[in-house]
Amino acid sequence: MPAPRHDIRPAEPRDLRAIVQLISELAEFENLTHLLAVTPDRLEPHLFGDEPAAECLVGEVGGEVVAFALFYKNFSTFLAKPGLYLEDLYVRPAHRRSGLGRALLVELAQLACERGYGRFDWTVLDWNEDAIRFYQKLGAEVMPEWRICRLTGDALERYADGDRPSRWSPSSWLGL
Image (spheres, rainbow, N blue to C red):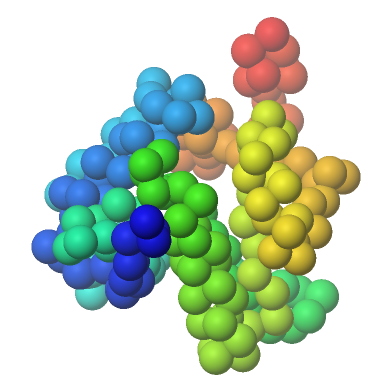
């Protein structure tokens, strides 16, 4: 029996609930539900407001949204060109290995080319070996020497009042 046909299209406001549900499923898959704060109302202005911060493609099977790819423009100083950064891609388990994830990545790579971008980046969790193999088969280079650095929550809020990091002891702001 052939795999169900899928369609890929730009997300629309009517997709917000489905996208948020898929984001919730992704958080569960990555064991990160404790970080989940997204709601349709919180996401809407960032995808569909006056100054969107991100864009989103959705994958549909039989009219049901079963996948999404949320991305935004970044910039490479070395290339002196913008790039496309894929924040998250998720395909429901029942639709994996159907070609939908590959189709979303191909669509994004084509979009980056159409826009004249210099690169297309994303991250993958080091324990997600299936995804790593999948990305490598598509020609992606997994760059193990790079590490993500992030300020969030209390660590980020320390900057709100103009505080200087040199005033903090590393043990206090690293939670040691």
